[in-house]
Image (cartoon, rainbow, N blue to C red; front, side, top):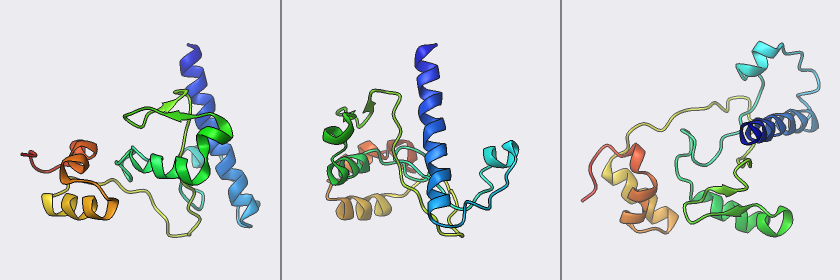
Length: 140
């Protein structure tokens, strides 16, 4: 029960911080959204996160951790599989553009994975490992 409560509190804080960011950016202070509208994310902006449908590759957390010094600053560590410790942690980005929308990455082809691997500085095998749930083919 404590773990479930910690997970929900972490997500609630991320949502509250997103609300504060919208206010700080100058367009959220006028929001008068109902609970249902908040749940349906009817506000401007999105907060996608590594490992979720719009960004299935967890490894980008490593770059985020390095850029922000996350472990040193707040003590959240990444495991070998890029899970966050403590588990009741969240990470991601805030995008404010009025046309920013969530989307799911569908099945991806070998040529797309090859291109991604090159841009991410990974081998094809590494990229296939991290993107396995999204592959439209069986890796050799």
